[in-house]
Image (cartoon, rainbow, N blue to C red):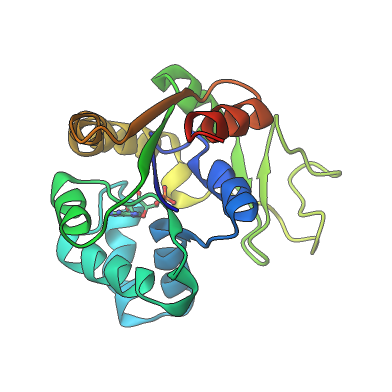
Length: 209
Ligand code: AMP
């Protein structure tokens, strides 16, 4: 199965992608995660991506499309994949559609006010990468990582001004993909404000299981 997860930053695509990947036994591919791993490893790709990400802007298509197309041609994708955070522009969608027949594009629908609330509570451990939330995943000791004891931080792209910029970029460049995949009869929309498990169930049902 080849799936795309659409939705605003903070809509819960990553969480749902992890759950679906386990269920369907196919890899979860997050372009954001690939960029972050490259930044951590100080690779040339990471250095190119960092300034765009820190400002809440999209990394240019010329960099992103090649990187994703290479990834989906790796051996573990022979039975399909779940794309989380790609495509994010019409050019990315066209590049993907010209080479791949995806089964569905799932839109995880969450209103902007909810997104802002969710993202402003996000924290992360700078040392081991464990994610936290001031409301939904609270560490045992406030501001301290349960796993390694480091002081938690707000990821640069989760800072309030950057969140607003990312939402603007989303509406401007990524939201048109909902109509794009609707026109191709591939769109499935689910209410992303429900509990995690209910969102997963809604997706699985809509995919016809
Ligand atoms: P995410 O973790 O999916 O929210 O992505 C974090 C950041 O990585 C985004 O705000 C973009 O700067 C960059 N990024 C991730 N995926 C893409 C993509 N498909 N196209 C361009 N930039 C991307």
